[in-house]
Image (tube, rainbow, N blue to C red; front, side, top):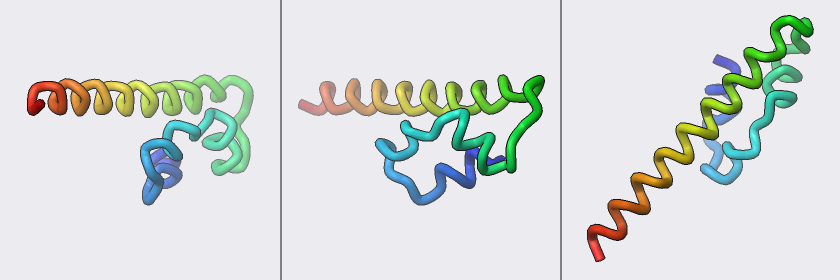
Length: 64
């Protein structure tokens, strides 16, 4: 997917900044009816990163 291509090689902090506009622009634009798809992708990435960070923090707390 375009989101995957945009996220490859980026740090987590950089990946968090990928926006709906970035995805749409990389695809050469999207018709208005399809813009929500790029928003879902960006939101999904942010949710996955948040879940990863939460689990990582919990693991770090356990190991202290």
